[in-house]
Length: 265
Figure 1: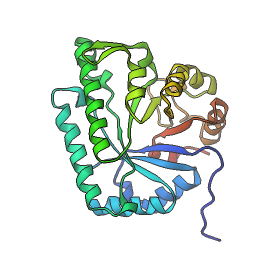
Figure 2: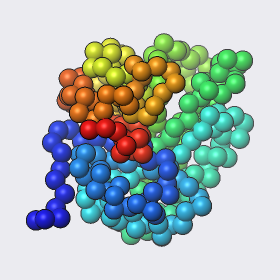
Figure 3: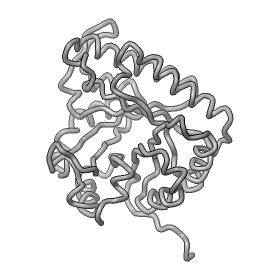
Figure 4: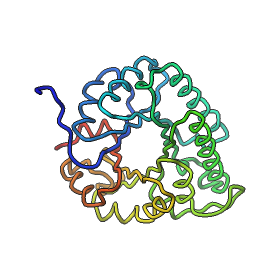
């Protein structure tokens, strides 16, 4: 029993892993941390400089502990004219990878982090940029469907304040995104239970109506935007207490693994 990992109680957590080199340099440490902190989903950045074998070893290890790994990619310029090419490159990489991997080595989903509002066109040509974003998600949904993988996407909590009116239709942008992807993930970057509950209330209703599980993201990295954005200063115990006070039925995603591992207890 001495080496057995003790699992944390409570609802499972998800997390983003951006520094893909960690699956080569510290795989056992990463898996142990995920287990100890009850994380059963990892959004793992696709780094084409890392060979398939490293991904296979890590995902096989994660599978042994019931951790599902989703292929993570995306950038602001994915809503530019080249966005479709970037998406196709990701899907092609995942398709090639899955074809050569054993079942326990395969990805369990695709996860996009695009943030179209950081693209210059969001202010200079909002309508076209929103349409490009919607087309990107529709394209991603079709391609992930062909791979038999669910699609997740990160969105800010304030998408519910934005609308669209184009060839796709018209309506609320948050509601559209929640209905379109399988795992809508809301970046609810606040550090108290009331603040988190307040900024996700509309999205929670939208997700319930759409029959989707809303993944609620919280921040643990240092932020220049203010102390209220992140749990970085308060530490892990405080964060877990606040998350437990929001709603135990939510799946919380911790942004991001590297900073979560460095947090004070």
